[in-house]
Length: 136
Length: 204
Image 1 (spheres, helix red, strand yellow):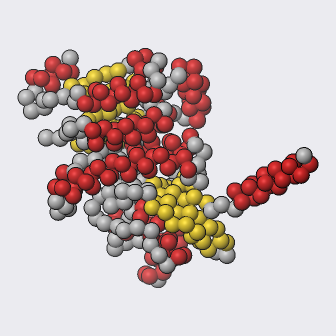
Image 2 (cartoon, rainbow over the protein chains, first blue to last red):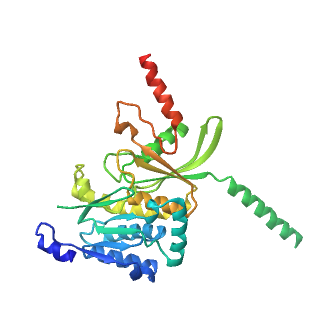
Image 3 (cartoon, rainbow over the protein chains, first blue to last red):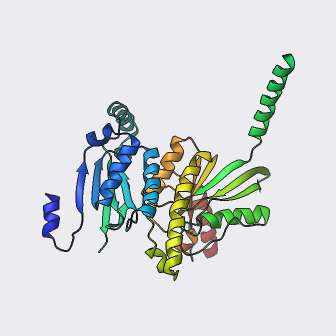
């Protein structure tokens, strides 16, 4: 739907938005998760991921992105932002949320946005919202 | 046999003793151009007379991990010895064209970009080896940068103590005094009252 609307708008072209539910990455190992994300970035997808990567996976994503800049022509890296569900919760709700997270295996209330740097100029964020600034 | 046991025991004691005597590894992390090297230089210059590295307006000036061993910091009658570790700024994007704006030629810009990406990988690899980390942020920029949050999250997961420094406070309103505080939690109200009294004395 979003893709069709984007195609109608001639000013914005050359990328698509892909939503990935957490269930699609839940059973993947860190290497496969990161490969999947970077593969989509190479294909100029802006990725909206339900949930978030683990802290060590986020740093691994940065490391692998840097390695890829050296190896993939015209790849300039990514823009990345996460809104965690915890940022909006009280202490008691945080505790409950962590219990749910430990059972489900991840922070399902979080949203991660990843886009190729060639398309996404900047992701502005404060604790409650994310704004994507696209390259002209 | 008894001698061997005694030797091992003494070895363990001495290795433990010297381990505890190792200098505290103090890492400077943060985004490019936040002032990590400037802060590390200021500290090293004050306590050793030497700087740790060069600074520049061009981002990614620090592209290798830089060290300064045996920096003894004396403050308010206390003294501790640190190994200072200045790291390349971490980011998720490196574009050689960004360096062209700073009158760096294309060939040099491409080399700089390549070295910058390798420096970022090196910075991340060093996270595990730090004892204490200072995250240096540019006070004129939005601190809610995902890279900052990611680095802090990793340090917390590794149980490494973190201090966040809002640098370049001179640039936000250079002609006025600026203090950092939290009204909600009453943090640094002392600093706030100090400044208010200082200013009030000027008119009384």
